[in-house]
Image (cartoon, rainbow, N blue to C red; front, top):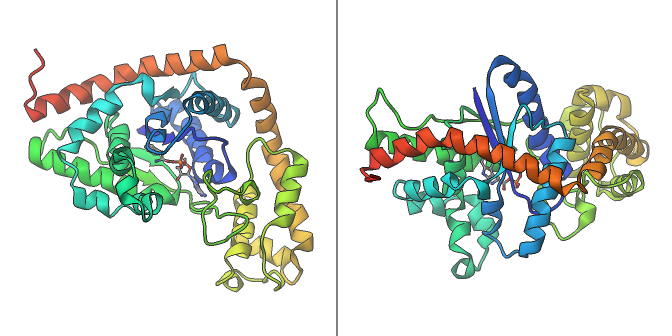
Length: 339
Ligand code: TYM
């Protein structure tokens, strides 16, 4: 088992990241490192430069994200925690894979279409080739499993297509260069939606902070955000089918279910028939209770820049080692002479 995943250090860790991905990172670390598996978790700082950014903020956000991940349960002694910028093999492999990825494949990426919008000509080349770097991130380590939220599924499918085509074009059938990775997407929390709009995913790039719950929000802020969360005037249904066509209600019940481990049916049996007046404070309480210990650890850790830099250095040393065999095999398969 090789488990690999990444997160962009573009600001605060929010509930969508946590329930969609990070919680699974921790669970997979706890399960698989004990059985001899390897977990590599990284900050996708090279991906972050695909959008306009402030360099000083990127550096600060990178360290803050390390603190957030460790607070959520990533253990740098068991998992390899690092940032891409300290492992040049990511960027190298991306270039090598650029010869295999097709522009037609990249043109179909929904994230590229969404982020570039109507201004394709003005978008960075990095935004366009972003999914090739993402493929390099996982193929470099022969990842078998990649825990992500639903929104990254298409990028993972592209990584498989690139691996498959490279193996077909440049390797023999019995000695493929790349392993095809499987995405691991949590069933109850694949897509956590914005608290202000049930049709948009909860996201760091939403201009309204009221749209998301951040790891750093205090109890008052969480209560306020949940109370103000958009709902509809209908009472909470008693059965799951009653959530059809009610994106906001479905999202809040889904968050409750993901946080408590209770089934949607059980939650609806308890709250069905009531308005959101009783449900919202219960949801806020659950969020506060579960997020508070992580938030407290985060507040302590984020100030310790020396410790955070040491974690990244140690992780990068290990990642660089693990990257060597695949990188060498890729150069060799392509006929590139390196002395
Ligand atoms: P990023 O930084 O946007 O998000 C990090 C992880 O959080 C998940 N996620 C969500 N899950 C459920 N609901 C949401 N509202 C929500 N918002 C975010 C994402 O699916 C992701 O798993 N391109 C990636 C980073 C990346 C990566 C990789 C991931 C770079 N290289 C290689 C996996 C493997 C990204 O921008 O994720």
